[in-house]
Structure formats: structure tokens, C-alpha cells
Length: 107
Image (cartoon, rainbow, N blue to C red; front, top):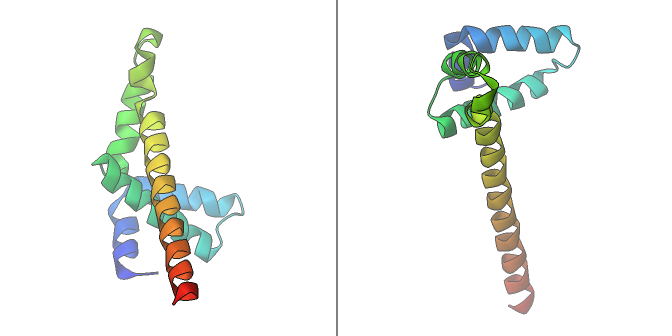
């Protein structure tokens, strides 16, 4: 694991607790945990919050009355937006690979 990811884990209690639960559930293989932490860090960058702030904000959101449903699900919406952005980037990446392969064939 990179030093950066190790620092990320050690900096946030919520991440350490989450990884302990992942491990206890039996899905805590090393590469799985590295992948989880990597993508959590990327989501935090996208959201502009650290993991502890996300957990706290989520708790506050869930305490809001039901009529504030949009606010209560803001992190679900942000996560969906994050994955959609990743998907768009992946499609662009594959399109570029295909174009390069076509260029090499025609070369």
C-alpha cells in the first residue's frame, strides 16, 4: 500500500472502523482494501470533504424530516454523479484506445 493511502487510513477514524468491518465480514483481502481506500479517497476529493466529515454530514442528513428527502439523499446523489463521471471518463478512454488501434492498423 502506498504511503499516501496509509496516511489516509490513519488520518480518519471512520476509515479505520470501516476497514475493520470489511475485514470482519471476510471481504478484507489486501487488494480489495487498497481498491476500496483508493476510490474512497477519490470520492472524498470529488465531494470536497474528508471521510469523517461525510459520515457526520450523512448522520445530520438522516436526522432531517422526511419532507427534506432531497437533502437526506444528497450523498447518494453525489455518489451517483461521481460514478457517472467515472463512466464517462472510461468511455472516452476506450474510444481513444480504439482510435489509436485503428491508426496503427492504417499506418
